[in-house]
Length: 157
Image 1: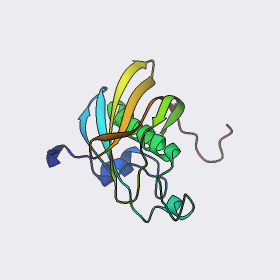
Image 2: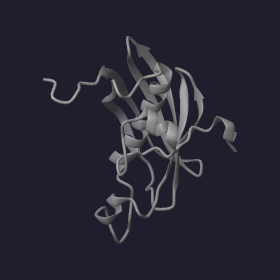
Image 3: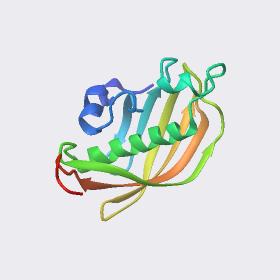
């Protein structure tokens, strides 16, 4: 059981990540260790919009969205570690390696997503993460992210 005083709730997640429904893939997080690790939580609801088209008769969470959930968990870890201001900073997912999908994830499942930093060199973070349901590994990957200055509207790219 997780100590609720160390829970990262929806308000902080919304303050630290630019994603919003329906693309926000982290509901809560806990076990944050600055620069090292975090555990994200995604409650998979039958109301998720992708279930309408991803095997409606046998709904399965798309693997690419499990990877996105892991990446967002890593971005939350990075955002807290860097104390990033999302009004001025973007955290960009830049690569994924060794992704494996082990079991289907269905409506009603809760993804526990431990993510840890493998390396942090000059602002380039390399992570490894797993997605688990009831302690059983359903997906895993290594992935990378970096931060960049957010451009204001109308500014040339």
